[in-house]
Length: 84
Image (tube, rainbow, N blue to C red; front, side, top):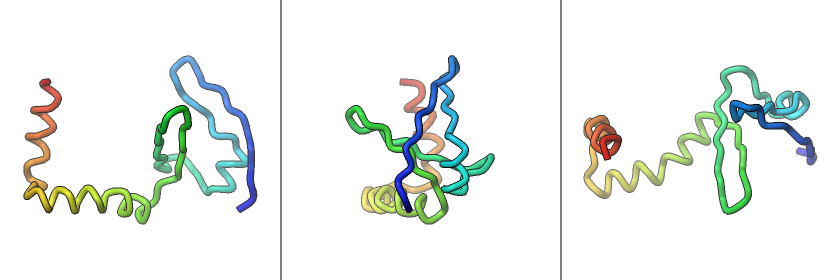
């Protein structure tokens, strides 16, 4: 893929418009999932797909299994953490 450099603007609501030629090049359409990764002063924006999601969650699933954490415990954990 060739390099494309574009500039965008952040709206008053914090929304960013992805330039049309980048959306078309990446096949980003309404409803597409986008991953944002902030590292120091750089922001990585990555188009998500099922394969990408599986790659990202694989280490988390392995750590949960190693810790003996079960999926049915997630909802209770989320509620406890939100109360803090």
